[in-house]
Image (tube, rainbow, N blue to C red; front, side, top):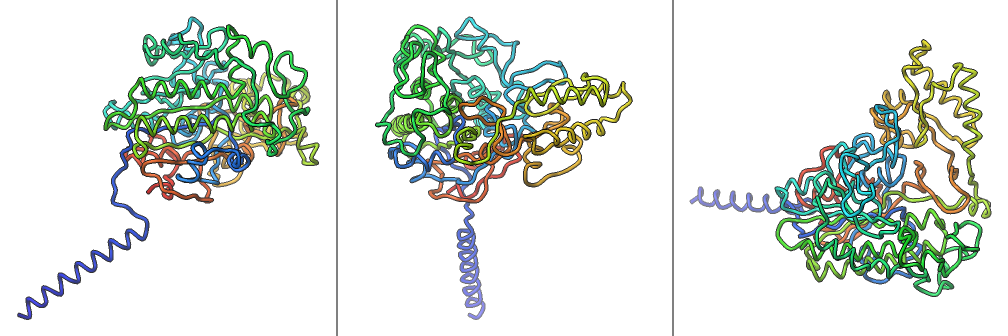
Length: 554
């Protein structure tokens, strides 16, 4: 009898302990869920989007675009690029690989190749031919990206059954997110064609649905005057429409609405100009919705991936600037395009069967001339003046300018053979040039390749530079302009620096497996891919250095 009572009490104790342990696991936010299985993942990259575009234009957004992300999804309010240069190619590669240029190798849109001695483009590949055009605009592939992407890992995990389709106006905005294994990547060829094209890396000919879309000449409906979505007087979140900080379309005397130049109205040529209007995002959405339908994305149990990059925001930002009514109108129209996309996903895939994230490939600086007029320190740097002075320094110090082979992406590439022939130590030459750079107006910091090799930086500007430094591809001396300083025209905004105005971007999640809420904890762009991988229960991209954002996941 006593043994039975003892056994009974033992069982009760075990059950109580197990229950308590399980509750503690639950309270700690841990989950026994192995994975979430959305039918479709949609990755959205908005080119040149600052985080404050969400808050600044918030009162104008509808309920089914940016507001759906924020109200029903998860908002990472303090997401940053943790490397420089902050530009389109490295940005898209970093979002999808879960790492930085130090690992994935895309150190710029273009860079000096130390092996061939020539400048290379991040997505160009002359070993492939164009598909859908007779021009060379389709000679592209992801071969310069050294590691896998989240899209690659999803394809591998599903034994290639899950589809990946990547779409952008810019070739690099489609090729790099698509990864090495995409079923297709499409980009927009402007000029006199106005067609969506691809590369023989993916296919020998365009699918029927793409040819049909191109032949429909739907693109011609976007060759029209650019008028504001709402009364421009309501755009009080932006500067005046008529100001000196904005670029002009051809034949314009002032950068004011409506923009209705001959090339915008001509439906038979110069389709490139559409990129510089919000209509470029609209034709991208049209094409993405066609892909969703024609490719049957999200139609079976193997998760598919649709990667979309909205590029017109970058073209508009470069031309008109961060504080322009043109940028505001572009984002209000993008909000409507996002609503169209969400509604199509609800209908086609099912409201509870897809997951979406949205981020940007970089942010942007306000126009320095505008900042100056507001008594805020900002500067333009005339690089030709520095080139002249620097050339004199090289001749005086080393007797030749041949010691420098190239300058690009704010890096000096030195000729190591010349340095050796002169009997000089590479490290000393790097340091001497770095110190010289610090004597020039507008340059805030300079670092050497030796410093990048020898140190392990954990924060600040050196940390950002080191994450962007690839030992095989980057230069010998890295320079940083002082905050608010650019080498760019006097109108429009730009990017590329390690400063916070170029690194702070939105990161929004919505859909299946996503928690509702927000965080102000610092997150980094390389955290996106491992977060999605954790959601799906698949392998991380093989170069991943980021960490999953636990708060995002249910």
